Length: 268
Image (cartoon, rainbow, N blue to C red; front, side, top):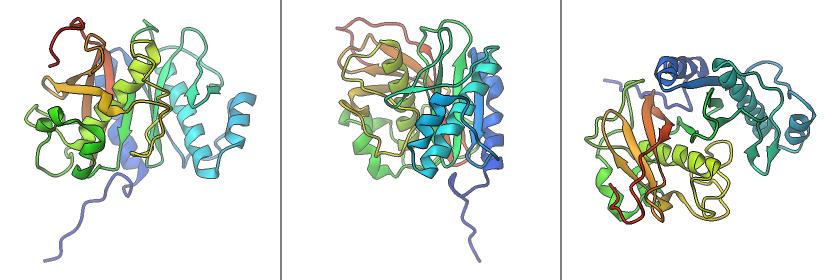
């Protein structure tokens, strides 16, 4: 008998993955979030203004397509919550939005996603798309010893749109939860200076940060695909994150702040 391997997120047709991510719109809308999606294969990608054009011109061809796709995804996410937005320049690796507008951008396997919120611009906002499952050996780069009990021995995520049950999480799910939380904590002032630029989206585990790492965060699961991610240095600073499965990958997004515990409280 010939065994047919299941295509990974990087090998599947973009339309299939886009369809699965698009199916999450009602789930995000219930959390007050707008979703935007774009791909590097869209014809005729153009910068929305001179600042985007200058930034894109300095990039290699592949990175330029990812950058422009991310900007399109952000504008679409903002439109989904009733806000318009022109070009989105950058400061370092971070997107700079006009006053009253904010979005979080992530890229994976040629697909860009973004989430935006209509109200409460100071609320934490973060998302992370991972279509290339991470090996279990990567756990040491993401987790500390006190988190390894969260891992489960099973294949990488399956059943698009389903969520972890609390019985165990994959490395990819925990990575995505922490990455989304990192962006949210770094982008709202909830995080200390050790949380450097979160950038616009994941580049695997080779992402460069000025200081700190995902191991400076601690994740604790709750239920139904939800978890709370806290700063180890200050557990009162925390966000709630939901992780859902998209094909063989995952999509994590921040729902909002988690009730503070106070500095001396135990981590969950």
